[in-house]
Amino acid sequence: MRSLDAGPLNGVTAPDEEGKAFNASAVTGPHGVLIFALLRFVEENPQNPLADDELMARFRAHVHRGLGILLVQAVGPLELARVARSAADLT
Image (tube, rainbow, N blue to C red; front, side, top):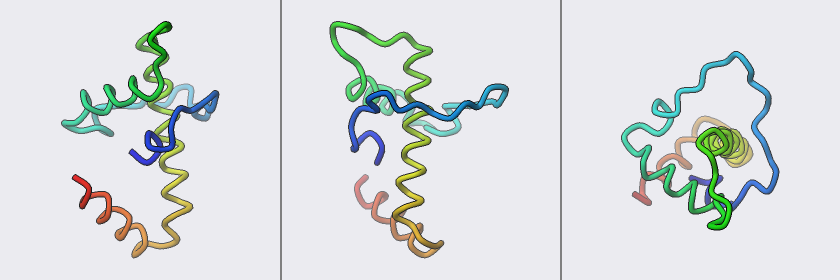
């Protein structure tokens, strides 16, 4: 969610992970429909809708960027727990 809060990717892509499996439902859990709706809201231009493969590529890029944001904010396990707890408080 932190990556979606940061706005559109503006050309940022996920690293090349050819040959690696990516299971979006394992990442989103039961909130997949909501997360992909938010992704479309942030990334999609009404005049130019995204194809499913491009939407998935942007999802992967947001996951990558979001993990990078967390790594900067969480300097240790206790800090990571604090960030997770504050995110849980928002739900």
